Length: 199
Image (tube, rainbow, N blue to C red):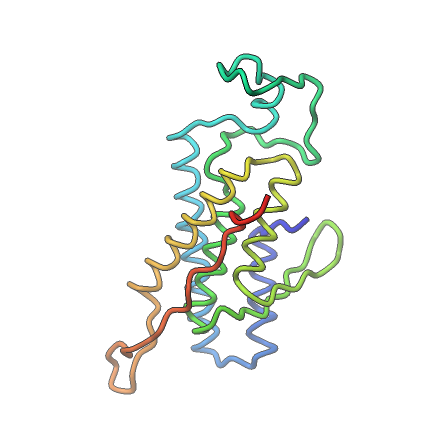
């Protein structure tokens, strides 16, 4: 299951820049856009978590008999596949950051094809993501299947991360024309899917 931490992002962006032979200015712009967007996404996710304070799956499933909803049934012995972190569910931090990284890449590269190879410190494997949508869907699914977050929290995080990075790239990190002014007419690829069309 993919996890998109700081080390993985740096390695993946560095690999992309090297394989595509980006110049020093292009590489610096790519790293600046990706890291600024990811940082803003972290702030956004943690602000939302403590604003909404929603139950994580382990609490919601084990204590379903106390939620006031007759359509839910408690399973006090339920265990997630991955350890549950000690913070509220919504919005999911991993999906917020992953979507911000994916959106920053698409905006800087000018295409939804991101050609990103994300290494795993846990398995030693490298996972390929051809598009921003592929990356976003993988991270959303991984957090749901691991039992760490609800799909609602993951999709909301993905949408928030996409918007955070789009705002940053609309206001900063623009290419400059030869005369030093911002280059005009930069088309932004369509927003990627956040995995809300499945399950």
